[in-house]
Length: 233
Image (cartoon, helix red, strand yellow):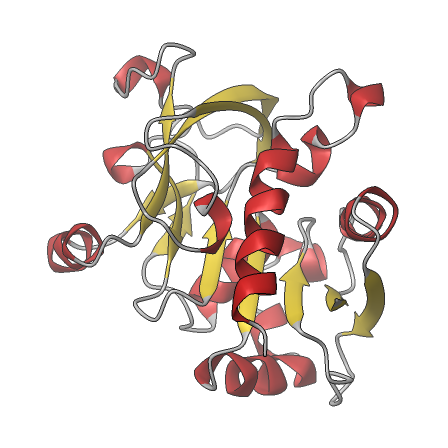
């Protein structure tokens, strides 16, 4: 499979993502610079975490206007697979490919630690192989990770089964104590209504190597590749 990783000025998780896609899972990886206008016929696009353009204004607000985003929006609107992690999630929301926004954490502080997320029963790409309710330990690293959307949007996300993961404790309890940033409904990740654009704040690429003493993130990538292999003609 040929996969593209988009790099913006300030991206700092691009090499982590490339390592997992290329070295852990053995896929061909193309590095896509933010000024590029050619997606090079990739089968899927990954927007990594970091601080695109220094996170000036809102996180992802400037990156949304990078030339490559015009191509990514067209790719997504044609049904192409797009996955954004952390800053990538923020960029997808800013670009309108995903609903809602990522706001400052309730604590008004940058948070970097391992947390737990609970898989929903959404059987699309990122949890294709996961049992409903499966708990994964995945790290977060963000200052603006509080997912917010208005009431109508939240109801639409629930109705269309677009919520991917909830922040939980290790026993799958979804509550205020297990919510690290104040996200509405403890939401940690969502997809679009077409189930081809995905975003999450936790970093599965930082939990996909045994050297890091945590490989729970591999479950997410394995789900993605199982899904893509079964859907790419």
